[in-house]
Image (tube, rainbow, N blue to C red):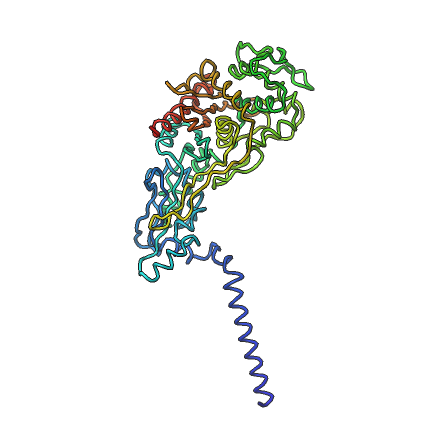
Length: 485
């Protein structure tokens, strides 16, 4: 071969090698990046080229798919009673991607997940059209409807858990929204989404998982747990060393109690029954900030929680003495999600064992065969069994003849704690009404609940955990108990 031909051959060989390198780089190195780029419309077209699998509650689909006209997206997502289930499912939109379960379980719902490889391979030989799998949730439909009915037109949230497994039974956030109104890719869908995003009441905010509130007096259950776990007090009926008035440390400010209640040297049981700020503020100060943080960590504070949808971390902060005392009664920089406070009630109801919250019970192939079944998992030992039972006695006193009598259910033992959380500069805003609780039957505790209500329309003096939140918790617990009969 003469020299010019050899040079041309070498040059062509280099070009072929470069082409092979480039092709392999795009197919194997950049593939995931290119597939997930917003500009890659083909991926979204393929996602909606066939009917999406469903999200299941109580054995029935709460989602569906319908054919679209005049679009290169063949199907779009629809919901059955969208506002009821949006806090659980999230949305799936041709134009605006997806969120929550619709996003996290997208592989199963589209049929693209590796768990469905066998089904996809089989369909290639049978000629069956591609189908998505189903996601079976832990939600209890009756409890979810009771939560939404109780919240009504008020801002707020409800979370209900099965203490024994961690299964989420209700997850409500109001006001809510209908994901169907922007599930397509038309101008109308875009306008509907913009309207929701601009709404001052934030209907697309999942208050159950993504909003943190001062937990108010519901947090006194955690402070009582810290007192028992650290040996500050053993007997819940013995007098505490709690003078009245009690001055916040390093200040000349008296910590006030609400109303004329018997708080001087009150026992832990009586202090919880009447929600004595002075007793629990002093307990938090006596224990110190580090021990309070250690106890809150055992209940799940200071870390994000995955259900699998991510919940914001609830925070018990490192702080100075006066702020730590206020944090011990659920104020100052103490912040908690409704999910977190449901976890507190759940751990106490489950004799101190905190289970990992979850809302996906099973993933199904298109033929309904399970490809994944969740196994309950212990998250932590929040308190000892002995101390959990002492806390149960205290919470049951609150409901029997304390501030939480509105949560009573005939024939059922209920434990609970009310809370009215101050917020705003110098307590300038209307308070939040809280209630946490659990119910006991002959078979143990099937449900624990947390409720928070932001009722900006109520008179300030009418806002209380016992008045606004406890009746909602009662109805949710009753719905769970009745559904098991």
